[in-house]
Image (cartoon, rainbow, N blue to C red; front, side, top):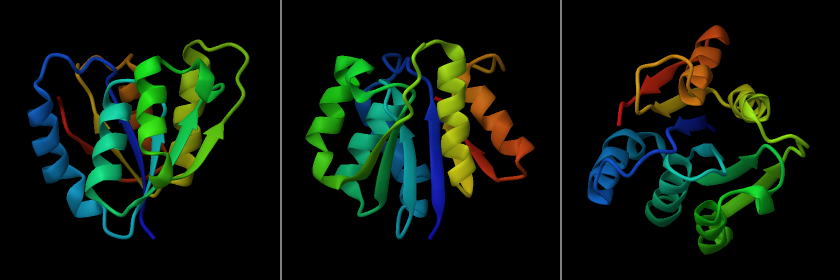
Length: 149
């Protein structure tokens, strides 16, 4: 089974939702048959890919959050609730302090379990969590697909 970590920007309001649907059809759909996706439980790309994958594919989905699901933004919690019947598992990593190191640890957890990463960065600045995850994937010698949004 192909295992894929998803990483991406939380800032998605700069594009219409229809553009994301087209992007996901082009860059997620080819990998979806028989795949298991690891998605962070945040807003933005995490929420959009969860909704698209749950509604358009039969892929297996795991949601990973750095602390607990209840600590995630309302938009993300609502997406999980709407797609709960399509989510295989929700992994709460239990971080007490939800700052950058906790999110990086969550991202590494997903990459460690995946055979590849698909990243949807908004900016080219390497200090974002998306680029940190893409870089970590490369350091692990795993393939990564970068789809700027």
